[in-house]
Image 1 (cartoon, rainbow, N blue to C red):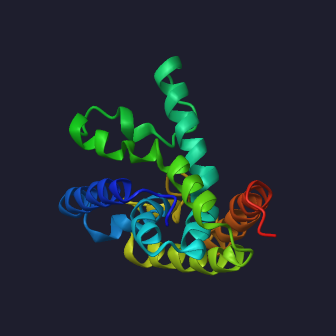
Image 2: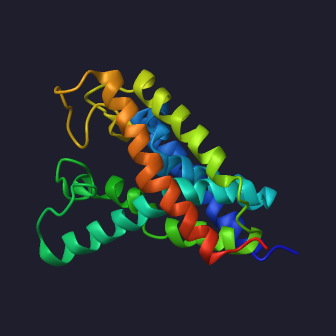
Length: 196
């Protein structure tokens, strides 16, 4: 029997479906290439399939950035000033409040991912799959995004950068993600949820 209750799987799946409908109409399908969107959507099939690998890859890919998103959001609410820029859009008055509220899926996402890994385990091979999937997501983001959309910041951190040739920047971004997000997340998840 699954540690994740059926009612939670149903509620979570309905939330994902609502998110997909709203964001598809508002932003188009390329928007789903954001790592956080992939994790939010991917957690639904990971739950239903009770897949340790899917849960592990999603957690390894976004756990640290999602925690940072939450810290940034809370500090911005408390201090009323820009911290990292990750949640800048949440305070943009040109975006309707109801639409910004849809993005609050970031708040519970780290806990959901940790719950999945706690329930299904964290396979050691999650890192290798995350590294491969992360590279693919960055390339797809570059191909299907634009400097104006800058999905996954493939054109520059927060804003478009012009100093480096785009392929070099993308390569450095990939190396940075592997070194500073994927590997530390893997170590943390392996420590929290040892496999053997």
